[in-house]
Image (cartoon, rainbow, N blue to C red):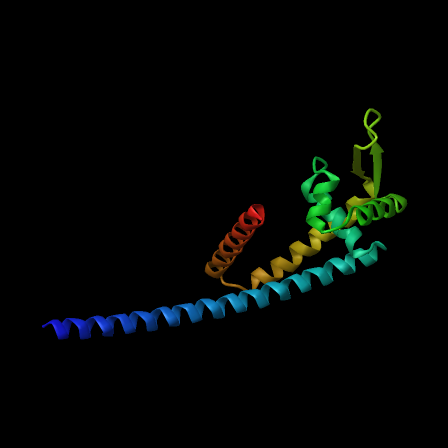
Length: 173
């Protein structure tokens, strides 16, 4: 009886390890596929953004700053923008100066504390942001139209979950 029990245990343990190995390789394959698809999606989005930026005679970093400013709002500090965009203080100053010269934003220094500077987007930015939103919406509508309703919900929930996990991980780092 004892030998039968031991033999059954080893068979179960072997099958469980085989199951885990299959599950892990499946997770690895899915992770690799997700990484590849995420990079491809980022490249496609960047290409579209670069096309819009070029239309308005903006460098890609200038366009990303305006887009980020429009989405985050005026209550974000320049230091926060630098961190999100991955720019040095000097590069950030250069970016703001270039956008100010192109009349996309206005810089205002606090009269009480010259170190405190606020930035306001000018009305010239609105058509560009509107175009970006329209093109992005149209692109995603054409994409979603080709996907079954049930798959759309799964896709959106999956993207939301991925963003939530990545945001939480980024907040910890």
